[in-house]
Length: 239
Image 1 (cartoon, helix red, strand yellow):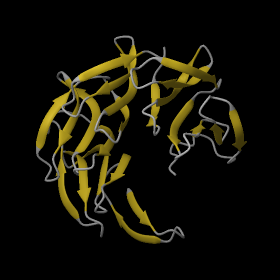
Image 2 (tube, helix red, strand yellow; image 1 turned 180 degrees about the horizontal axis):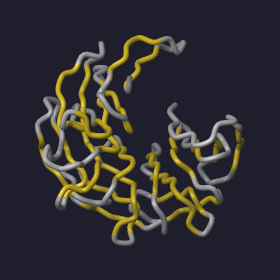
Image 3 (cartoon, rainbow, N blue to C red; image 1 turned 45 degrees about the vertical axis):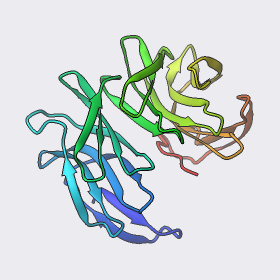
Image 4 (cartoon, rainbow, N blue to C red; image 1 turned 135 degrees about the vertical axis):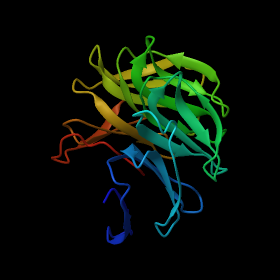
């Protein structure tokens, strides 16, 4: 089993097996679920309805060993998928029916995608050509890029359009806040690195990582609190 839907009490509602590991999942406004992961049956992207029934599956190239690593869905139900580079492409935009709209390139191996309220697309992943954060328009054209100095793993956008990035440590820094133009506002030190990030309506920042559980930073990058989950490699945080 690789995709599970749980209720608010964490009881199982349904499950679905793609046949291999799943690395990313997203849901649209209608409750459809998009899963991406290791290739299975020649496919790396699966769309399920709210009851867990397969609607369609897709792969960037059925002849290559390409896997998908991350997915995000915009307000129109278009899915943005990041995966291992195929020829010169590593990110693909699919319409709600699973047809390719356009494709683009940023990281050789994108690890996380998010979309803001204006439809801009933010990608983090393996450091490529001395860059590790990319902002794209909805047609996957590059607007700006930024180098944290290391591979990146998590990205979130706050209500003011600032971009919060987490990743492997670079000069002991593992959280970076950029403004909407890609200029660094501050960075925060976590020696072991950080894996994922999200923000709340007050623009507080929640970070999870390798060994420390979860921390909350305020919008200025100051520590509010921390909580030890006693788990290593906490990979996902959602509010």
